[in-house]
Amino acid sequence: MDSVAKKENKDVDAVTADEPVAVKKVTRRKNSSVSEKTKSLEMLLSKDRKRSRGVKKKKTGKKMVWMLGSCLAIILVAAGVFVAIKFKDGAGKATAIPEPIAQPEQIVEQIPVEVVVETLKEETTKIDIAALKVKVLNEGAAAGLAGKVKTALVTQGYAKAEAGNGTAEGVVGNFVYYSADKFRSEAEKMAEFLVTRSIKSGVAAAVTDEQRSGDIVVVLGK
Image (cartoon, rainbow, N blue to C red; front, side, top):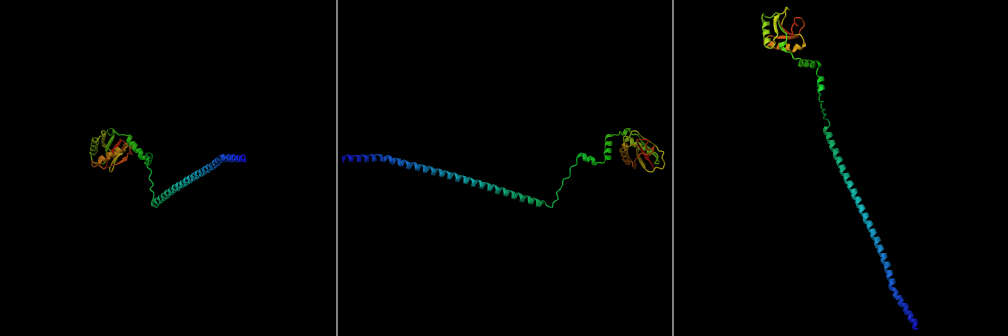
């Protein structure tokens, strides 16, 4: 009996000695399962945080786009109103078209060719009045008048002026004839000078031989 009791006590002691090891194993398994659950919960929480951040960013981006679109719409509306007001103010008013500025070539084209030619002749042809052949012919005027006119012309620079009697009869009025167009301006100047001497004269181109006997011929009639 004692031997049996000893064996039973040994078996109980063996079980009692092995019991803490089994408890430790169970505790470790529980702790490991708890840690795994904790990790899975942390992962889920991190995913939720990331999702919430992404949603916030999307909302912020949409809000910015909406604000920019609103600003652009306001600007376009304001520009349309401004254009409409300007168009309304300008309606019915004639737009002044600026006249084109004439170029030098166009100005020359507008001047008659004859005027240009005469101007060029006057500018290029310089007449020396001292060398002009001037005749003063008495054809019905008072005696001695041709000599007086000749003396007055010499004092004005017509050094070659001569006086005499003409062959024509019945001449009425006084005339200054020029034998060529280049002497016309001098003939007009001479007629103006004779007016100062109370002799009113007409100016004309020479026709007869007597009128052409000098560069300029002054005929004094009745």
